[in-house]
Image 1 (cartoon, helix red, strand yellow):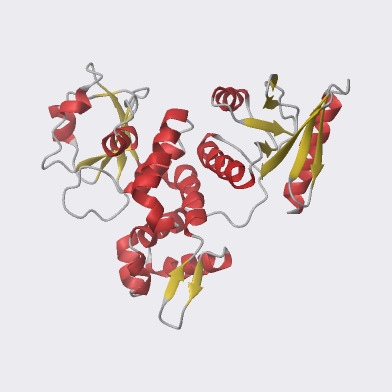
Image 2 (cartoon, rainbow, N blue to C red):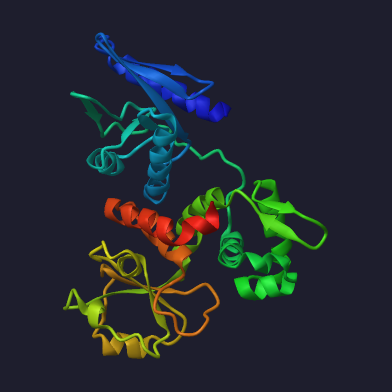
Length: 333
């Protein structure tokens, strides 16, 4: 809480200092993370969502929280963090989300008042201050437990096999989950995941930052931008992730970047669909990290949700929210 309060205080002080004409002013209540935006005789109550660190992988989840916070409090919500780069600032503005950072970047909108500042650079090298982050073994095993909660009652050996991690890592992951407040022991043999939506959010970021980059088989391109519509996945060791899976589930997305998860030899798939290696291609083939059951057409819902939510793309984030409400909400809330 102290770190968050320091960030909020710093960001608000920087904003007020940069607008010392007194035309605009922000006041804060550090205890409630609430405040007021004043312009002349007009005053607007606001609520702040403070994040220690922000990058593209974290934007979607933060926007989800902003919407929920605003809905719960009935107040406009403002994202506050140490630093927001120009690209993210532009995306937040275009999506009509308000933000402040500690170096003077800001986007505030109240009735006919609009303030947008981007491009201020962070000259201080900062390290995120947070509990021990999830590592690769955590990410793999937590996925297995979220995908099949009953697995938690199985032996360490079975959990390790299903998660594709070393047997000795299972106990470490379980202890980390307890420390973070995601696991309670019911007795010596049984446990239960709690705070599951928060765990899913943290897992999505960790998946993007810790594991996803290690799964790359290669990038490809095709002369036909719509090749995926007629692609035959029958008897091929591949399934759709990301935007194609999101489009299949929700029916609202027009895929631009194509994600394929594979668990075997993809030579025939690549040849059949006339894909060509290209480091800058918009077709990404990744190694499936979970245990495959049958010949699925789509990656697990949790993986598709993470692909979309951490993409930093507003249309993907909207699709992820629909997917969550449609397929995941009952499991995580």
